[in-house]
Amino acid sequence: MRRNWCPNMNHRRSDPPVRYCPTCGEAVNANILTKKCSDKEHANSRMDMYKYCVHCGLQLIT
Ligand SMILES: [Zn+2]
Ligand SMILES: [Zn+2]
Image (tube, rainbow, N blue to C red; front, side):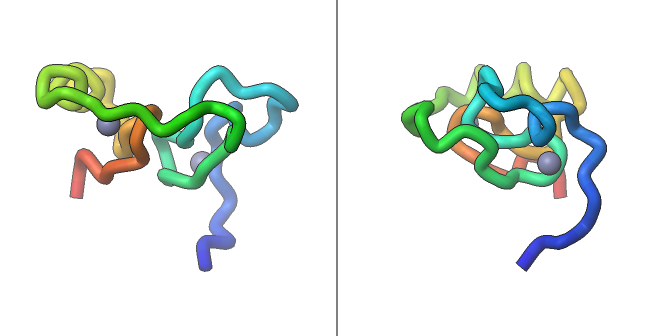
């Protein structure tokens, strides 16, 4: 169970534009369907310093 305070603003929005929080990987909007990502998308997310993929919740940086 993750109970750490997460600074990502998606947790405070009523309708976040992404399914997963890029900072902690928690699902922030269950209404958005999980997407099948390509390696390129994950590489782009890594360059944006995202710890988790916002589309599929995969951990990008360990
Ligand atoms: Zn978070
Ligand atoms: Zn992904």
